[in-house]
Structure formats: C-alpha cells, structure tokens
Amino acid sequence: MLVLLHIKEKAINKKCCTYSALLYSVCMLKEYTHAQEVLTTAYNHFNKQFAGGELKDALITVQSVGRKRAYGWFAQNAWKNKDEKTFHEINIGAEHFKRSNDDILETLLHEMAHLWNHQNGIDDCTVTQYHKKTFADAAKRFGLTCEKMGRFGYAKTGLADESKKSINELTLAPDVFSIFRSFGTNRKVKEQKYITIPISIDYLERLQKVMELTDEGKKGKAVEAIIDEYLSIA
Image (cartoon, rainbow, N blue to C red; front, side, top):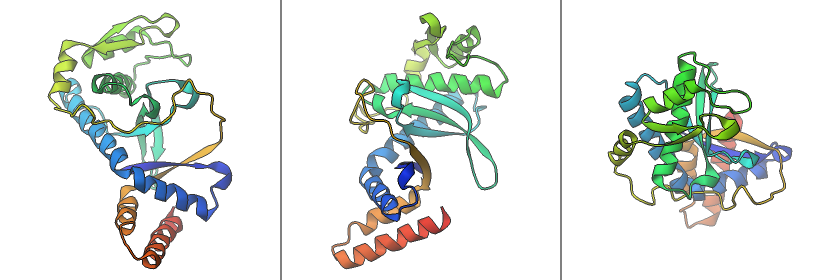
C-alpha cells in the first residue's frame, strides 16, 4: 500500500521538508491507512458484486480536492511504476469525509461506474463534466439511482436498495472514516504548488516504531537513517 505525501514544490529538494512531511505522516498513519484499507476492501467487494470482479485494480487515494469541490474523481492511467505499468486512480476527497459512510461509499460506486465505462471503451463524460446517458446506465449497474443535474447531466447519483444492502454487508463502524481535512472547500486558502510523492507504507511503519523510542539520541539517528534510505531511492 502507498501513502501519498504532499510537499511544497519550492522545498522539494530540501531534506528538512521531507523530514517534516514524513514525521507528520507518522502521526496520521493509523487513521489514513485504515480509511484507505476500508475503501480498498469496499472496492473489491463492490467489484465482485456489481462487476463480476472484472474491474481492474485501481489505486484508491484520499487527497484534497482543492478548488474542485468534488466528492471524488476517476483518473485514467494516473500512476506509473518503474516498469512503466500504469494504474488508474479513484480518489475520495479528503474534505468530504465528514459525510456518512453511505455517502462516501456512494461516491466510490459513482467513480467505479466511470472506471467500468472507461475499461469498456464507453465515453460517458465530457471535459465540462456533463455526464451522458451512458454514465447513467453504468451507475445503475453499480446499484445506484441516477438523475439529471442541470449542466452536469446524469451526475446526481444515490443509493438504490441493492447498493444499500451491499454496504450493509461490509458491517462498518459508524466512525470508520474518522480522518478528514480540517478545512472545508468554502474556506479561501492561499494556493501553493505541491508535489505528490507516493511512499511505501513500510517506511512509515518503521518510523512509527522508531518514534516510540525513549532515547532521543537513538531516535534521531534512527529517523535520519530511515529517511536517508528513502531519499536515496525516491
């Protein structure tokens, strides 16, 4: 599993910046990874139930939506590994995790419908986010209701009985999505350019253990060794 770090572009080459980002991520590790694991489990569950397991693996992310004000998005071939293999991305907007489990998972199903159409070569959305009838057809396949939403077309989705039943089968705790950005999309925030860096959760788990050391000298050296190792291969 990968954790996504967002580091200011102008400080990307500064070691201290990477130190701060990694250490902050250690503090948020438990909540973030749990949310990501639940979303991935839900993705696999819905894929099996509504798509017969035919959807390809996608990288499920939790990122800020910035000024997009979107609950989530699907991005084709958004990630690439060292072997040039590409992966699709389904993102759930971090600012919108205050919503109910049902609402968050409805967004996941909505984006999975986009992925289904893309995988099957079906054009379902314009660059201006007008959702075509082809999207409505896919949404219904994934247990969603679908209505017209002005200039966005068939973009308004909701949970039908079948998808509600599927979500109940996951038996999620009410507060399972306890992590969210502390500011909403309506707040005016000075925009800065950030670079997103995917980092293996292994590094963060090792850092988490190191941070439990009581000897500050040993802790500092151990943290520096792990981060130097990460920077040498990043």
